[in-house]
Image (tube, rainbow, N blue to C red; front, side, top):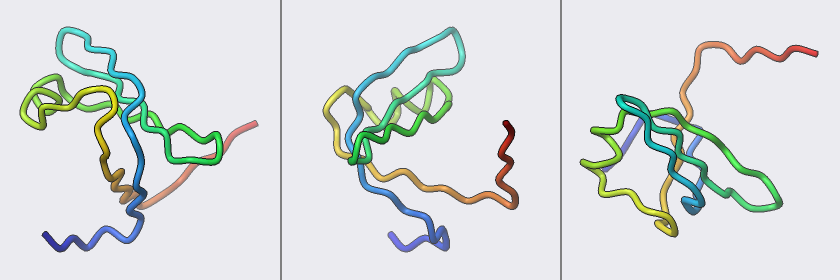
Length: 68
């Protein structure tokens, strides 16, 4: 599948925490860096995501905010 998303980062699922509707999926992208994505529990189930799975984090945003 081809996607327009330019920011595609390979990683491995290290943790999935499911709530009632949403789930937090932590992805180790190497170098001590972990991305956290919030997706629906339905999406986790549809993708059959589990700890240890190799995945691609796709990041498409019109803005990135940083605060201190």
